[in-house]
Amino acid sequence: MDDESRLHGAQTMIGREETRRGLAWALVLGIWLGCGCGWGQASGSADAQSPVAAKGWFARWVDLYRQDWKPVVVSTDAAAAGAAPARRGLPSPLDSPPFPSSDWSYGGSPTIGEPDSNGYPLMTAVLGAEKLAKARTKVYGWVEPTVNGSTSGRSNAPEVDDQYSNRVELNQAVLYVERLPDTVQRAHVDWGFHLTALFGTDYRYTTDLGYLSSQLIAHNRQYGFDPSLEYVDVYVPQVAQGMNVRVGRFISIPGIEAQLTPYNYMFSHSLLYAVDPFTDTGVLATVKLSDQWLVQLGITAGHDVALWAKDAKASGDLCLSYTTKSVNDNFYVCANGINAAKYAYNNAQQYDLTWYHRFTKTVHTATEGYFMYQRDVPAVGGPFQPEANSNAAVCSVGETRCTAPAYALVNYVNKELSAHDFVSLRSDFLDDKRGQRSGFATKYTENTVMWSHWFGTTVQLRPEMRFDRSWDAKAYDVGRKQSQFTAASDLIVHF
Image (tube, rainbow, N blue to C red; front, top):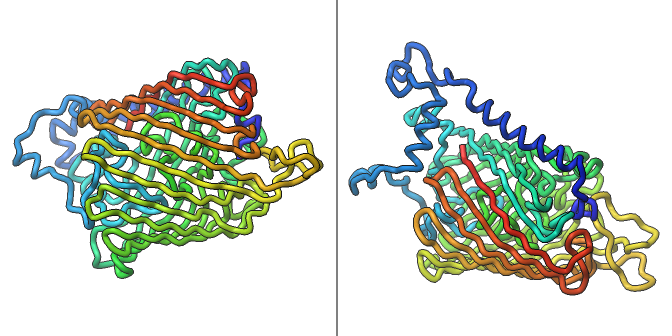
């Protein structure tokens, strides 16, 4: 978990140089994507002879963005002909876009019964729409530059995603290679896989002990690379209404938020999310019992550790999801990473409940609460050293180790304004009883208001204003302030 150097890194000349390096990488990525204009022009093929194909894939890619940003009005018949393929199960409760997902989310599995209806601008430009429709393996991703201004001059921590104050930086440049199993059909076993390459400042929030972790743990680099998600899915339709078994490294399953930025309501994360587990490695079975009930059972190496890491511990996951027939409510309860709770690298025992409620098609709330703890955490100033990249606990006088609990609650209120816009208000509470999660033993509150605007379906802008307060200690600006105001935004460009 985060230690003081991770959460409160000073803004040095090295940090500024790494910022320039990260932006240079974004430029390199753009040049790389634009340098092979002859791709997709298979000589002698029918596509190569057409005026559209003759443009080259880069020109076609640009045209796709232009068409996406300025869509033409189509007839009702044409819209129906291009409608998304049928799904199996309850109807989707939300519109996406503008919201990050059309379904009440659960982790560790594709949505069982949901067809693959994502758009892939780059692959469409390279292959053409006809070939893309037949392809099962997709390559896509996004680039996310960000900017923030803050009342803190040294660090925004324990706020994450814009931990470095008063900066322009590259948070995420992400490449996905993915094959989704067909979970709509019930006739045969199917399979899929997912590979993620993440570069940017956000690598520090997905780093696992054993996966290139020296970038953060040994060197505390501002920019880094992380293979964040690497797994295989096997879908077995004969079990109940479908079972998906995921093997590999995946996002820690409970909760509203995820580190991969398009799947979040806001640019910045709640404090609740900032201090909980990020990714796990193991096996997880997700079984759709009915249209309303879903159960998950898994075993992992523990939170944020590779199977081969010295701190790996066999840990159990058990989750249950229930959705009402009206799809107005969803309850998702998880026991996450459960073992003997003895202190090790981020060996947090997490009990989590998420509740989604839809008032109308355009207004809904998302609420999450959890209780976490570890036993035998080394005391601040005691004879035992905490794990690298983690914090000691503020124990009672005379204790060399103690149990370190944390309680958290967050609520989002979301209102859709149009097919391209929504606004969100987030209210957040964290009680880090012993300071083991954030570095300071204090209660925190945070309130953020955000507006999200989509340019077509490929570019998203999310400006926000946020106010944080630590109530029992000066936890902001590297222990110098009790409150912090930030104004920030990201820009997500999908490809």
